[in-house]
Length: 299
Image (tube, rainbow, N blue to C red; front, top):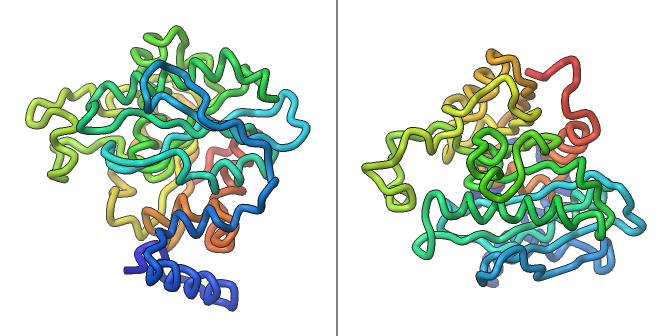
């Protein structure tokens, strides 16, 4: 039941968080609802429901710290196996990034069965291109836009950064990105094992070029790949570690950070105020945005 909480040190704060999650589940509240509930009112300025396209799910929310001007920008895409998700569920991500001085853009995109591969990539590319055109009005620097995502959203971020077809189709280019950040993303998952994912990618005729691992070049934007050793949903070695190694071998800048005993969902949950004690995910993301291509590229 408590897959969000993996093994590890449990002090008084941990016990409080566990108790809150337990009570929330008993009351039919989702863990995301509880994490969002920990965001203080007025913590940051929010511009909600902005349209980046004409369709119902082509909407985004912008979170910005008070007085933001020329701040770095992170466009974040959530996970959900490309079948579910809602930007409102990730208020805690917008709050976390804005608290570190970033302008955060949380974008919806079409999901299956309304859309499959590559439609959600086209949506995401439109969201990024819209951000680059308009974010200066919200205190962000259009020259320092990063794409990021968790799980299926990490896949989206990787594809936008590595495969120029998608941003190119939206009038932009991966070369305009300051970098990309993948949290437990699937980057090499053929043949598709998960039955609920197969129709999303047109199985068994899934094209090989749907995989980020096949788009590695020396010119890729700087990348930060975050993963946990306790992830049983997306294999950290085959995906994050292998893609980071391939990027480095090609001569691109890529940093891999692996968190001991951290599971798939807790990786993004650790951005929230109640769970930041669990891992340095926010610190590592912040450091990368500040210095996207350090001389030492991590593990």
